[in-house]
Image (cartoon, rainbow over all chains, first blue to last red; front, side, top):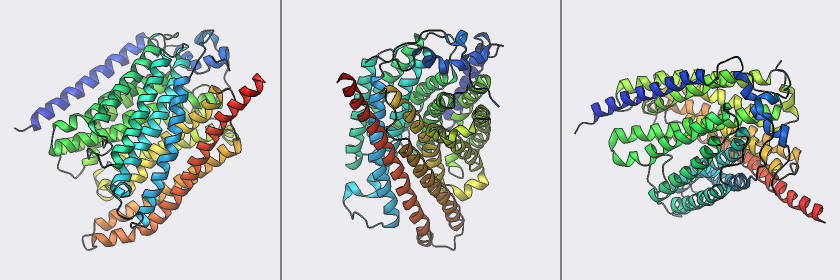
Length: 59
Length: 466
């Protein structure tokens, strides 16, 4: 049994699957606001924890 | 110059969750301990290059048994465990909620330790599947899958209950790590058993390359995206650019594994695809590195007094270097010289130690004092651990690149007997050994500092109670 062509076709399938998923989420990211005027606000999430809860921890 | 950050409460919301962090503590303290133990194995292996007769012919202490233990111990005992511990710390904070289940997290930590201890016993006993990076016996592979499902459920459960609609780039990378690891690990450890010959070798190299590219790279970058702004106290330069880096990495990385088989018995089209995608990796790499450098613009002096930033920004430079090397030695002409030589461990160590372990060490230095509510035991000791790891690492990487090139030129000359090429490399391996001693000293100081910090926290609690 020669697996060469099935493996080639399978890799084409995976290639287009990855391409489709990447493009789907890329276009969806426009709808979710990752490219809009306020899209940079999300980077302040890094500091959200300490601004309201610095040092507080359950014992 | 990027501005010192200002509070943007509209973007971040108000109150935050109270974090327990038991899981993160378990994972990190285990990981740091394994880093030290496996570091001893690393030094022994490096010594065996110089003194091959050392430790005689006792089977568990031979190179063939110790080398897989070193690789698996460093990858899964230290680095992945540390990355998981830091993920347990970072994700709840970025989502503004508590970890979905601390009990599940602790159970995952216990299972992970069982796996690592099982790996030590089985690999020393010679129970080995014989695949690079996939040496663990099948029963341990199954346990890794179970532990990963538990880890994934906990992290995705936390993200599902998040307070903020939009997700910071670190969260994206951590989600990617969980999904890609499942795909990569199953391929490398199970799919390879169902095929033979060239296809098996191809699958194995796809796994080996993506173990670094789709497991340690995304989680390492997630940590860098979190800890660089935190440690420098400055917001990320551009979140949009970080998204470009994430999606381009998601699309390009999986195709590059076949570049390990260049000039081998695989089809030319597959080799060419691997080369083309390896070159395209420069897109996500540069978008990541530019973002970090732009974030630090005007803030570089902070690295003087901040050991986390030292580790983080050195890691970024090593990441840039290793990701420039990768595409370049994927070219057929360069590959004909460096493939299978000492160049490759030099390159791999710069990625896994120089970049991703540096990110994990920085994260550990950042979170341990905060989780235990105490200052780091010794700042000077932390700085010493950085310099030992940095000098040892540089000695190791540079020596192996030069030695590897030299070795490759010799191998390409059929007039030179193979054994002469081995003897010629001895000076390189002596430098490698002493570089290893430096790195191990850095690891020892790191372990001591972290454990002493934890012990200090116990003393501080006792003082408060008294």
